[in-house]
Image 1 (cartoon, rainbow, N blue to C red):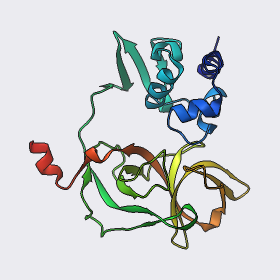
Image 2: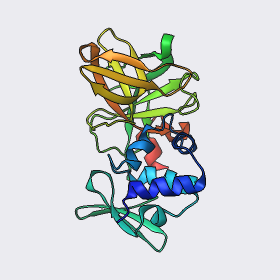
Image 3: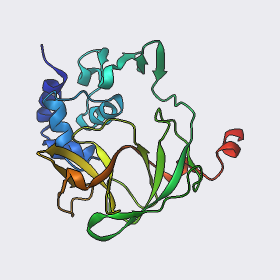
Image 4: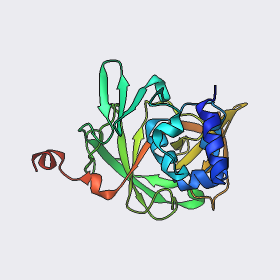
Amino acid sequence: METLGQRLKRLRKAKGMSQQALAEECGWASQSRIGNYEADLRAPSLSDLLLIAPALGVSLAELAGSDEWTGAYGVQVQVKNHQVRESVGAETIEAGTAKEGAVPVVGNAKLGTDGYFEAVDFPVGHGDGYLLIHSDDPNAYGLKVLGDSMHPRIKNGEYVLIEPNKVFTSGDEVMVKTKDGQAMIKEFIYLRDGMYRFDSVNQSHQPIHLPEDAIDKIHLVGGILKSSRFTHDYHTARKK
């Protein structure tokens, strides 16, 4: 029986695309995520499948090989009458139906040297507005990107949703802060023999290798959001 990874590889080759070309079409800096999916090392999320399918010119059901399948984190996904549903236990969410929520924006990600940026933190409970998006992580926060250091993946003026309590794996974008206070948004590649490797979101920068004991924190980048998702007053926005 053909696995999702094998099917993805077959469809990609039929399209005449390399892993890197497909990754770039989906807006990802590196092909490692595609490689992991094709090797069946991790299950793609619905949001990733919704990017991959049109890039390959196929339907979501054709890519998945079925109208129903198990996605990332054991989420049950169903395609019926062109509607997509994700189910976790008794809860069902229809694609395109967003949960309400607000995540505080706590600082800026401004270009520094060697791909690093300065994170401007506000006191706990304060910030510079909110991102109108739901996160299951109670400690989620947002950062505004200033400059083009992370272009084309993240553009000047866009926001990144950071989810510190969520698990990240190879190919995920993460916010890394070192013990000497430097911070950066990179793609996590691996932790091997006490050494981290991070690839740059902007391919003009070389991969970075850092010892494990030099890292203060690594938080998952859960999403990249347009400025239209930002508001200074969440409660006022809810009343509109």
